[in-house]
Image (tube, each protein chain N blue to C red):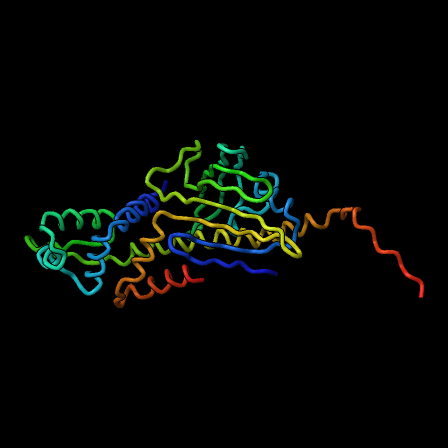
Length: 163
Length: 124
């Protein structure tokens, strides 16, 4: 099984993974609630709300329900907007935390999202680029001098962005 | 939005300024007063105080209670929060993609495309 590559490149988080499936299937998996509900979200989280309007200028409003570290049930609402779509090759837009009424959460970092679907031998390679307005700042933070006590956080942050 | 994510947005905003990052860097070497911070940055004390207020509101530093000096100190926990948030993003994609992989495999099990005929067997 092909594992995911994730690297930080300036302000950009780059991820890449190859799936053993034809491109139209992978594309559909990203753009249709009937498919998304089978896989979107980390382990233990279910897609409990999904309203997809997949067209340029359209949006996807979703909710993931799961449990937090303390075992409390938690609903996590998100909103994606689609700025440009070129089926079945790529789409781009934004991804942001939202509330259940579909309002983007004010003040939260907005991720610019660009997904690319490339036909490769034996399947489809997904290339995802997520740009955070703040990733550069985070990198600058990592480069600061490190003292005991915060070393661990630094290391984890660095490992996170370097992987 | 939970209280944690609200604070997170304040933290990101606070980290976006290079002077404030420089102040944080100085504080990794120990607590410092406004006076001590103002000198190397060639900034007025009120300007430094303003930055410290932003950092304090974001939870990135704490201020001492000594009447005048009120030395500023780094709060590593808040940086931890930023790290956790990034980790969450990573986990989201990693685990979602694992699920997608399995899901796509189940789709593959549906009857194969009859377009590719099996090659005719050759007699020896």
